[in-house]
Length: 361
Image (cartoon, rainbow, N blue to C red; front, side, top):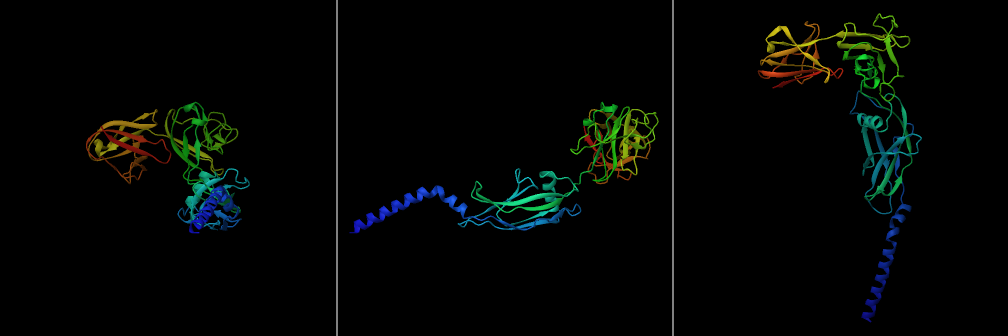
C-alpha cells in the first residue's frame, strides 16, 4: 500500500510539472491581461510651464503618478516619454527611467530637454505630450502606457544671437562669413573683430541658425553712391567699405529698428609694459590670417604687460582674474611668470570672449 501511494504522488507531480512547463510561455500573457497602466496625477493637462532663465536650479515641475499594477509583486520600470503634441507618439523621446513614482525637473534640466531634445524654439510656447511607459524585467516586458497629459512649455536660451559679415574679405560666401555676437539673447548690439578687405554687408541667421542669401541683410543707407552714413537699411542699401582700407577692425552693429547703425574701427595691436622694458613704447604684433590671431615672439622679464592698439591707451586689454581672458581698458596688468623668450598670442576670433596666451620657448 505504501509503495502504491508513493507512485500515485509521483504521477501527480509529473503531470503538474508538465502542465507548468506547458504554461510557462503564457505566464506573461496572463500578467499583461491583468495589469493596469500608471496614472499621472501631476502635472495636469493644460498646465503651462514657463521656464525661468534667472533661476536655473529652481524646480520647473514635479511629475507624480500612481504606479502601474501587475498580478505579481515586482519592480516596475517607469519611463517618462515626451513627444511633440499631436504626433501620437510616433517619435517618442525616452527622457528618463526610474523605479520611483515621482520626478522633479529643474528649469535648467527641462530647458535642456525642451530645446536640445524636442527642438522647441526659445521664448515660444509649444505643446508637449507626456505619458508613462511602465514595464517589468530587463527587456521592457509587459509594457503598459498611461493616459496622455499635454502641457505647454516655454523654454529659453542663454545663447546670444549672431550677425554675419559676408564680403570681399571671404568671397561673398554667407555660409562661411565671420560672426558678430550680441550681448545676450534678444539683444541687437552686435560686436566682434573682423579682418576686412573691400566691400561687405551684414546678414542675419535663418531659422536653422545659418547665414544664407535670402535671409534679412543690411547695407549702408547711402545706397550705391559710394558715400557711407554708418546707418543701416534693408532695402535699397549699398555695400559697406572699411573706412581705412584693408585691415583688422572692431565692428559694431545694432539692427534694432529704432537704432540701425554701425561702426568700424581699425586696430593694430602691440605689447607694452615693464616686462618689455617700457610702459611708453609698445612692440607691434603681427596679424596671422591663417589663425585669425595676433602673434609675436619676444624676450620678457618677470614683470608685467598689457595689450594696446594704435600706439595709444584709448583701447587696451588686461586680465582681471589671471585666467587668460581679457578685460577692456580697466583690465589688470598681466604678470609674466619668469624671464625668458615667449611666444605671445592675442585671440579676438570669438566675439565677446577675447583671450591671450604666453608660452615660454
